Image 1: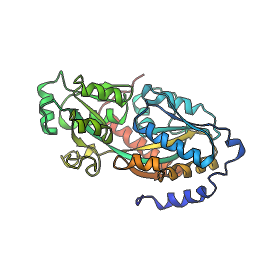
Image 2 (image 1 turned 60 degrees about the horizontal axis):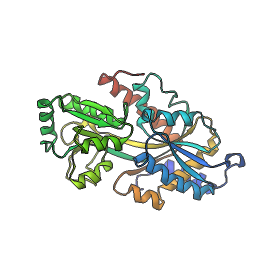
Image 3 (image 1 turned 90 degrees about the horizontal axis):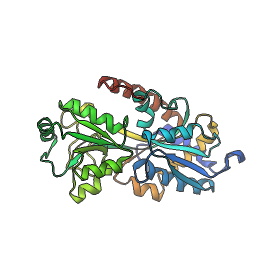
Image 4 (image 1 turned 30 degrees about the vertical axis):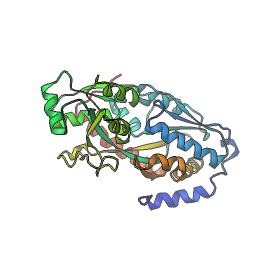
Length: 323
């Protein structure tokens, strides 16, 4: 919590004082938090901790609705078209808002105009993990193996256009190798095929790999953080390995339909930031992600900056928009 932006804390502090005093028209409930991925992943776990906090803050039912598919677009479209009364929200990884417009011709929504930014809650880094039976013990050996076994050199991601997908492409470019991308409807399905030996490796949130790493079925070769992960302090970052362009962290964002009144957005932002102190969120964040709270104005600014930066990055690797 030490890195909270002072302006964010000050801005949300005032809103927190009246956190339960939502206008009557905004208290129709239940509060519905949409997630575009299956249960068990990072957005889903964050959303469930948020739902518990919203129940306490507003004395309203709060439920998580998983709408997996199309790399989060189905959930995004549902929230875009939802009521702007403080009862509909989206919890999404940044990639859903800043990658997808550059990889699909028609999302069914405009991330920068169809949503009201509410809060950024946490940040996570990513890792490259491979099946433990592969002979590569480090990133250099993996590159050599991929060059020698091009038909087997592949990587899984939770969907086309996701941050892990783009990171895998950038990684292959940096290593001078070719990797076949295998997209899945969520991380769990991809993980099963990597552990089963059907796909060579996977890019996903570092914390996502911990159980199979402990079980000995996966080997993590590098992470994308600014510093080594506390979960895997023995694993180098890509920056340490001479590939600073592969340094990337990603936020988990809370969004509402675009026309949600600013006063309601501010109150839910305060409740969302308060959720970082909850037992549910603390238990999840501990060692897995870093709290990185931003309020509505700061998140709006970050969304625009990331949209432009990642668009340039996607263009540089020659990715062609689809659908």
